[in-house]
Length: 232
Image 1 (spheres, one colour):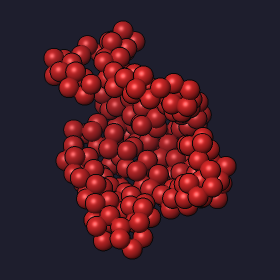
Image 2: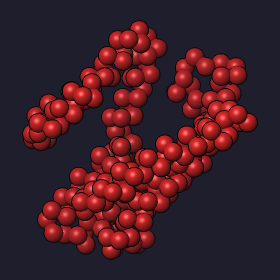
Image 3: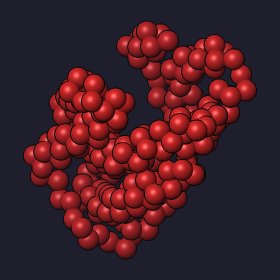
Image 4: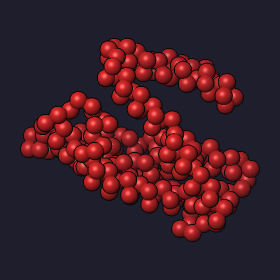
C-alpha cells in the first residue's frame, strides 16, 4: 500500500500528460529497485524474525513466541509476491484494467481455505501459513499475465533520471506514514482497552474522506460516501 501510494500517482500523472515512454522509464527504475529490495527484505526478514517478532506481538513468550517466529519465516516470501502484485494492480488500474485485481484476492483466499482443509489436521496453523504463501503466487501471476497484454515497454535498464527518481520514492516509502501508523496501533493495543482502539480503527474510512478532499482536492462521490459508511 505504501509503495503504491508513492509510485502510482506519479506514474498516472505521466500517462495523463501522454508521456507513456517517460512513465515507463521511471516505472522500470522503480520496479527494478523494489524487486531487489523486496528480495532482501524477505531473506533478512526470515533470518531476523526473532528480533522482529516483538514488533508484531509485544507480550508473546515461550511457545507463543517460538511459533510466531516460525510462522513469520514461512510467510515472509508472501510479502514479496503480494507487494509486487500490489504495484502491478496500480499500474493496471492506470490502464483501466481491473479484472485481474478483482480475481486475485479470491484465489488467495481459496488457497488459504484449501490449505486449512487439506493440511490443517496434519500441520495445524502451519498449514494456513503455507496457504498464505501459495495463495500469493497466483496473485502475482495474474497481474503479470494481464500486464503483458498491455504491451507495457518494461525494461531492466532505465535512465539515470529514472533511477534517481526511483531512489527518492524508495526513501519516501521508508519514512512513510503506514510504518509509523502500525507502531502506534501496537502501542495503543497494549495500553488502551481493545474496544476503544477498535472503535477508532472502524471509523478510519470516514476520516480518510475529508482528508482526501481538503489535502488532495478529491471531492468524494455519493458512492464513496456510502461505501465509507457501510465499511464502518
